[in-house]
Image 1 (cartoon, rainbow, N blue to C red):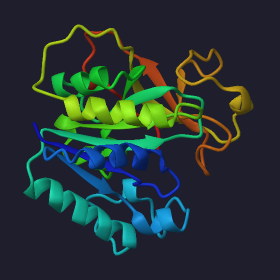
Image 2 (image 1 turned 135 degrees about the horizontal axis):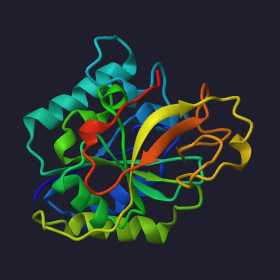
Image 3 (image 1 turned 45 degrees about the horizontal axis):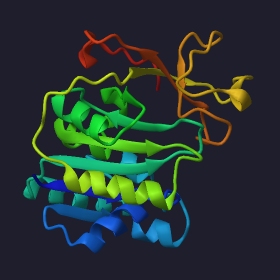
Image 4 (image 1 turned 180 degrees about the vertical axis):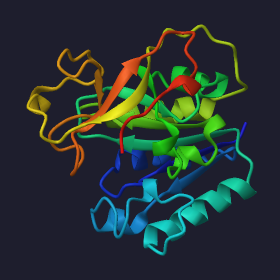
Length: 238
């Protein structure tokens, strides 16, 4: 099985570099590791001209759109069984697998990587993201504040290197679907608890907090039952 692992798509999210560093030291020939945005990392900025993870399949001329084209061309020209995009968040979420498509492959990856939940992002948000390039075999690993350590990086690298053929698994991971955005002026933002039901919002906050995004407070999700398809998601955000 061939796996593509990318970290540093956002220049201020560097934890994933420890994971790919551990993989590189193993000289595993079945894994391709990529540093997403080296310039933004060097300058300690999230991006230079535009958000790289919102620049895929866009006909623009920013630094990030050129990087996105190079990454997507690489993915199209080199077959991989799994694609893993590593991110971190300032929010108090735990470890989450973000997917554009819920299927046996993405569930298998979320289960093997011992995430606490699966969150489905709607097409409106994934069409220009990395996991939207090949959604049927891609996940974004999101680690919240306090969820990163050298030990975790090494363990995650070891799990990635051990990935094999898709197996039918009986998982008990909760599954959520993002349905809207939380306004930046929401009064409860400072004490918000991610993926815990919020009575006022009538939903489950995700990647939410005071400093998570500059123009909105985070996302709001609904919890799905096991028989719900990701095709049933209705997104009311911008």
